[in-house]
Length: 279
Image (tube, rainbow, N blue to C red):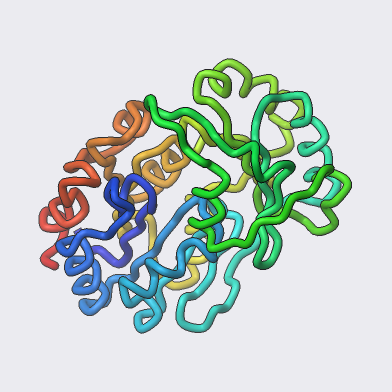
């Protein structure tokens, strides 16, 4: 295939379980860019939580793109130009935040350098038998300072790109339909991990954001290889000419993919790229 762009989810795809880019993956992606292939990171993370990996992969030198907030925003790494942005309205955000008060979840919103939560000490969830300080995990991942706000709905005064909730996986699996019920026709509501459920503007996903910015560059879906592991990667995998699921991906994503590669711990990205293009 003629490959013009590589699109990568970050957590569970680009990063291994140590939250690192392996040497083989880094080498393959830098060489791909040197050969004229555009590299794009597409994540549920905020833009601030993606910059460290863009720097490591030398994306600034090659006009790489960052698709953040699950497709609500696209940034050119070199110019820092915002190529696409679509947030919820303030009214929509307030309605979500008010509704979420009924549920046993940890709600997080961000603004500038801060992540805002109700209670910085109400921070633990259990995942795969281990306690996780999810607020610390998310704030450090986004490179945020923390701030405690009693009433996030009353506090919100700017359109939010995303409203994130974290909770026990079993609780979210049981209650997510109630959480999204008032907004299922007006907002995008999706799991990004079994302990994360989030809200973005209607119609927002990674595929829509990519199509909006790549077609003007002359890059069609058939010329894109996309890699992912989660539910929020399904439209991305379906959009790309070559949709690749990691071995550690959720079953629904594997079913939608053209290929299944090795896991994020076994250099699945360079393994598949060797089959798709000589990098």
